[in-house]
Image (tube, rainbow, N blue to C red; front, side, top):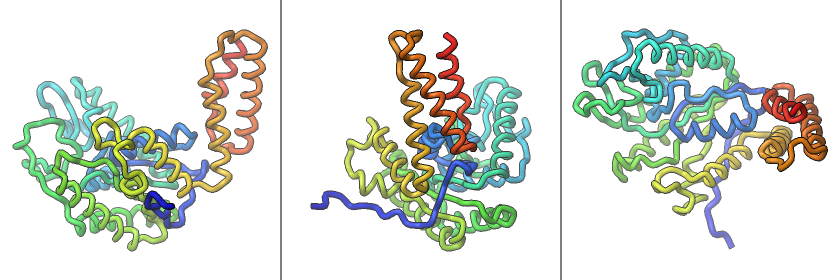
Length: 328
């Protein structure tokens, strides 16, 4: 008997350790990006912090592509705290120069990564946006400023598609082989209201569908939203707030992403890397015993073999860990 609906993973997509990834978007992008990083992939994730709406994502992506650094005039100050309407509150601080330096150092690194990237992952969270009333500009984050400084509205499908079509056409003209994965975050924005959240997610899905049709050779949709809504249709797969997916759900979605994106050779490398990481988590009772020293030597040999099989992997941290064990 079948007790759940299975989501088919469609679209031709292949990701390997030879790829360099840039990821922008909601906190779901952070979660999946962290799992990719933990599995040894080269990824630059959310260099602006968490971005929720597709308009902020594409505008920041354009700026990364153009490489224009931020100026102090672009910062705002509120109650002694400096921040940027292009960035998450994690970039804010009490010293304007420190905030600007942090923004630009991260920006410079991410801009370089984007020009070297072979894969771009964008995760849309909500179609509801807030525009700064004084300029009409959509902000990435309101930074808890007074509500009357902003105008709230829902993006339309057409304006999302038009903006992305223009921006991506320019980028793909220079990087025609760039692989782009679009996802809709399964995290529900209930502060907008249940019905409004449904409308918002619908706008995002419709916009992505049009973009997939416009760029069939470059853009693929990964159904993270559907995996949680359909395959994991149970509140036991949510965290305590009943809105965010639990760690179990995230691991499951990542496993499905592995089926979607990785070939058997890449998966085999991931399994071997996971075994090494499990060995690093092992806490010996007697680290100077011969048995543990042999254990460390065995893992160093495994690291060396894995490095020879997959030279793109950076295993220096793993190598240093077991070498330090031999020199205790």
